[in-house]
Length: 289
Image 1 (cartoon, rainbow, N blue to C red):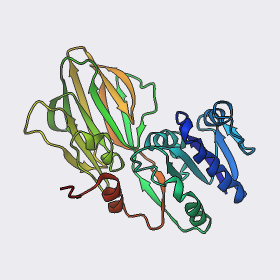
Image 2: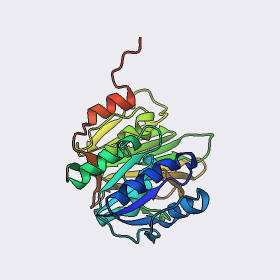
Image 3: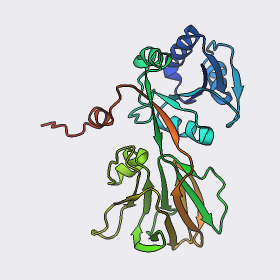
Image 4: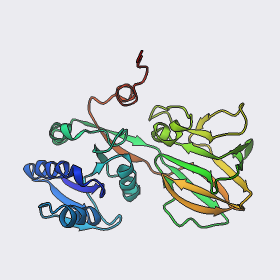
């Protein structure tokens, strides 16, 4: 098998996990291509002896499977590089919570045994597409987790006039609005009171950030519906964050959010159960009295 490898370039203290990963892959005579930035971090900064491998920049690679070593943030960056390639992504968690990157370093050897025995699952996760009418986005317009519209300054709220399939929904007076996929429902959306959605539920949630009205609540809609946002702000601009990659938009910019025409494939162990992850990682329903 050929693996494309991405990694977190800020975790020097966890370099032993990278050494273990490359040792396991070498034992299986895997063919490797490594993101150039990650390779430079491992060799120049950490002085690790890395097996001979093809190096690549950006999305200029092909592989049977992508491995990302880090947390969910590293996984999201890797997913943006994979894009429409349809290559399944395996996340090895050296971060904290880890819903996307959920294979622990201690599970690596057993996980690769299962992969080489073809005993693993591939889950297809929906992606959001952001279009801006009146302004060209500088960054990648696709989000695996969420698209957030946020106030740019710290002084006042923004008004977000929201329509679904052209029909008015409401005008949010808030610090922002988080539009999340089921994958992103356990990320930023959850922290602002959004609902947890099962990965294959084919839904999108809209959750306001610090709304000024007590009767405004999150809403869940079908993921093949189109969301249109018109934003007003005292500073005449606002922020749009696409999986955490933020840029400023002018007040006159209309945002249209819809389901992308491709999915991201996430590798899970054959016995993975979503509800187990909720209980183990988030102490779901735990009574700590």
